[in-house]
Amino acid sequence: MKLLEGKTALITGASKGIGRAIALKYASHGANVGFTYLSSVEKGEALAKELEALGIKAKGYRSDASDFRAADQLVNEFVTEFGKLDILVNNAGITKDGLLMRMSEEQFDEVIRVNLKSVFNLTKAAVKVMMKQKYGSIINMSSVVGVRGNAGQANYAASKAGIIGFTKSVALELGGRNIRANAVAPGFIATEMTEKLDAKVLEEWISGIPMKRAGTAEEVADLCVFLGSDMSSYITGQVIEINGGLNT
Image 1 (cartoon, helix red, strand yellow):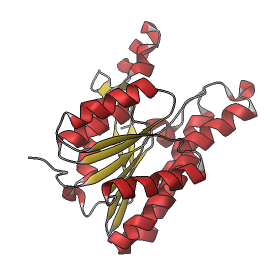
Image 2 (tube, helix red, strand yellow):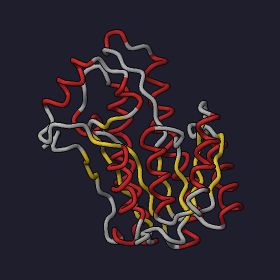
Image 3 (cartoon, one colour):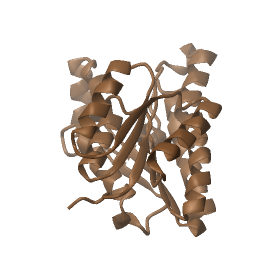
Image 4 (cartoon, helix red, strand yellow):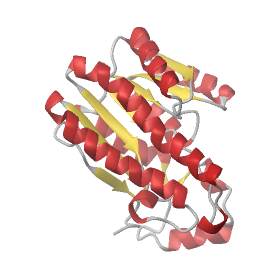
């Protein structure tokens, strides 16, 4: 059963990791997919071909989600190409970790700009389209760190907590227009980033997870399929944690 048949989705930061898994899962469920990438040009081009091979329309856009004008232009180009915008997945993000005492202003500002301002930029642009359609699902990628904080990640935690407050506000403002907004808060997910961690650090993280394993990007993507589909038509303003019980 294809849960997203006939829908169009725009996914930011999809050249690798969770974003890439969402793009592939959406395509496998019948959605036409537009996605953004910035530095990973080769990976972005390869993903477009991989998506098209699944029998859907796909297009990659080299675009900086943290740039307000670029985000507006991106949505306009997407709608010209795909005709409508049913689902927006705000996934683009970076980390610049460090203890607060050593964190520079640049490290803080950059993470807030890329992780949080990009969500404002894309959502503001997409909402104009969704209001005319009287339909839309917005999925914003937060984190367990945005829910409970984490030492050495004050900037990242602030950005991801900000996404939660933003999502809840958008849900309250736009619920009457049949536009839904939800946040997904992954816990410890195995990606290219986690592969670089020291084995001992990895072991410590996993020992604190009740399910005793890391999650997969595909499992996060499954949740995003549900939130993008009509199966979640009465769910909005929620923060859905996917963490193996880590924050229970």
